[in-house]
Length: 299
Image (cartoon, rainbow, N blue to C red; front, top):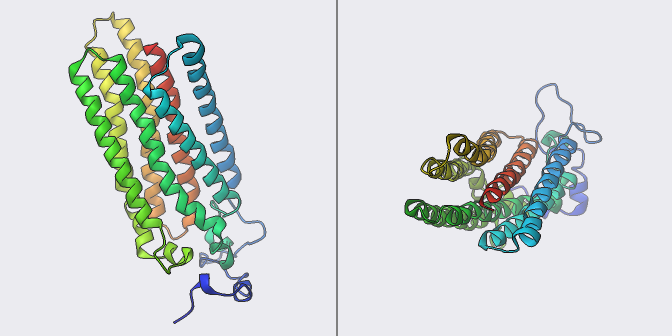
């Protein structure tokens, strides 16, 4: 039996430095020196998304601190979501700059695939995304409980949404931890090639589809509630438009399903992982304009 790549000596790995990590398509020559990549576009897109998110969060907390002068539980969940979002961003940047996520695998040498700069970000990103989504989505249910407090049916719906969302993302975090954590005596690289690790790719599409259902639930609840309010038609339409900014998040969720499907059905994992990282972060950050608009109407 051939030894695991992770167990090779530095000299043995170095002898494979001219061997691509994936067999290139016919007619394609591996390019280790200046490969085609998505790293620059990924960094520009995700950094811009992070910057926009930061602006909305600062505006929110400025309003709460100096105008409203009152905090609520949704401020805590927003803060936690921001912390996890920044951690997710930093991990993705690490994987792109040092681990070569966004590069064709035939343009990456075998020793680079064994690098911790690739393996550790691949371990962390599936664990950081669920809590980020959990705190982000719970924020909306907490807001709805404040805005539509007199509506009993909506309070019940918000509590149900909170419980389902919490159970779903805690369960996802536990499952992902089981999928991506090496077993005793197993190297990081060996586990990354195992069937257990690959399950995290297999379940990615159905998990994202459930996430989209939760997003649509968050989007629809306030629209139904506003329709029941005694408001002038023009005023009611304007309020509904504020809540409909959540369509951005739903579109991001739908795109995430598509790119995760592509990732699951491709051998060139690192190239297709780049769009997944970009869309996931855009999806996470797209909640902030919606949340700020909703919160401003409450204020």
